[in-house]
Image (cartoon, rainbow, N blue to C red; front, side, top):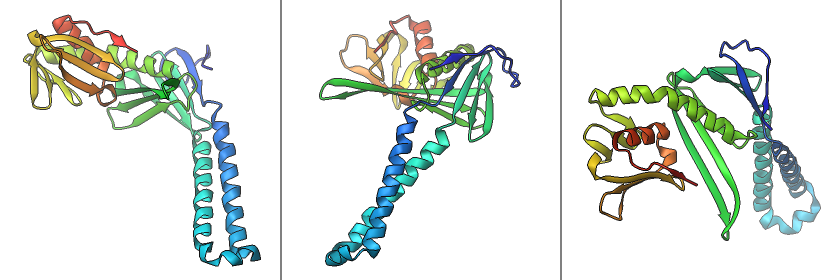
Length: 258
C-alpha cells in the first residue's frame, strides 16, 4: 500500500509526501509467463523430435505454430513483468518522480500540460467485478507518463495529479476566456459564445445541466431531454478544469456521479 515518507529529496521538488510501488499481482504474471514459456517450448521440442508425432505428420506444422505462439506469449508476459516489477512513483509538494528500469525521471506539476483520466467499472452478468484506472500525464516537452493498476493505490496517485494540475491550469484558462480566446479541451471548447463540440455550439443561457456521469461528460440543453453532448471523459484533457470553468460561467450543477 502507499506509505508516507519523511526523508529529504535530491529532486528539488519540495516536501515528499507519498510513494507508490508495483502491485503484488505482477507476480502472477511472472508465473504465467514461466508456465506458457515452458509449455510452448515443450510442445515445440516434442512435435519436432518425438516419434509419437509421426502419426500426426499432417498436423505437425499447426502443432509447431501453436507451440511457438504459446512460447512467444510467455516471453511477452516475462518481458512485461521485468519492465514494470520495479516501478516506484514518489509524490512531492511540487511534482513527482518515477523510477523504472534503474532510471529515475522527475517532473514538476507546473510542467504538465494535460492530464487524462479513464476509470472503468467492470461488470459480469450484472455483478461488479472491479475497476480499471488509467491516468495519462503529458508534459509540455512531449513526455508522456501513464499510471494504471500496476501501481498499488493508483487512484490516489491519479487524483493527486489531477488536483495539482487542475489548480495550476485553471487560472490560465480563465484568463484566456476572459480575454476572448477559445479554450480548447480536446473534442470540446469554450468561448464567450458558449460551449462547442464539433460544428455545434450551445450558448451559455441554453445550458441547463452539466455533469460527469459513468465516464461521460453530459451537457443538457435547456428545455430538451436530449443531451447536447455525451463525450467520454477519457478523451478530454484537463476535464476538471473544463467543468470548473462551466460552473464559474453559468453556475449549473456539475456534480460527478459514480
